[in-house]
Image (cartoon, rainbow, N blue to C red; front, side):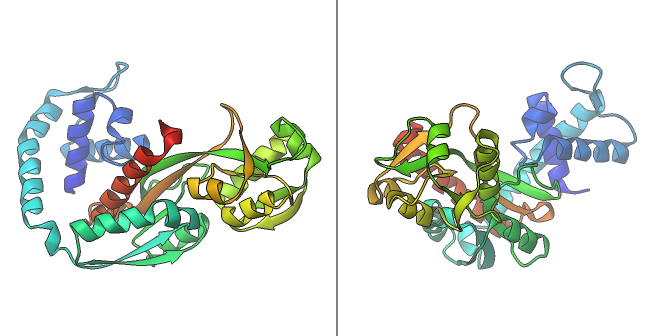
Length: 299
């Protein structure tokens, strides 16, 4: 039996819900449910009464939790005392282009402060390619856009940012609404091989089913430059402040039903407790928190 399964049991008892416990243990609710069933198979009897709306722990579950909780805490403290600064080696990170600019610099600074002996080996790619590299064992972790269908439960997903999509148009473009601007102007399409590109294209198709792209580009920076020059309009993730300053464009929100994308850090589930991956996760969570504090749009 693995220690993280016992962590999951304690979290479910504490929260009174599988769904509420899932974020704490960085798993999907279905993965939490699977771990609980594995524990029940191990003990040969139910650990929760599922007849009520909220799961209720059985006396055995409470006894198991009471037995292991202090031990788990003591083990965590012992591991912490070994010293984060003793951690060394290389961690292989895949990252999408936009996160290289928005999150990677602060994450690297946080890593350098916390674990100066850890070397980060970065490679860039689109989300789908990075996922394939991760599953093949050629990456230890990746920062990417979570797939539209949620992603495999064999992977460990840590949410970082949720970004809304917007329509960008030349500053003096004719048209007031998103539909009108898309109708009147050429559509510059975000790379269809990227998850964000497919999300954007699905939105355009929902507004104007017969709209065809005039140009397809692999990066948002290039698209914003084209839009600013008057080439056309595009649907892309919300702009970074440096792009807003560099390129004068109109930026129109897509409303409450507009698409979003979730930027996550993902690793193989069996390596979620690897100390190198944990250090990487904590660094990106720190970078995300800093990005939110400095973004006036999140105020």
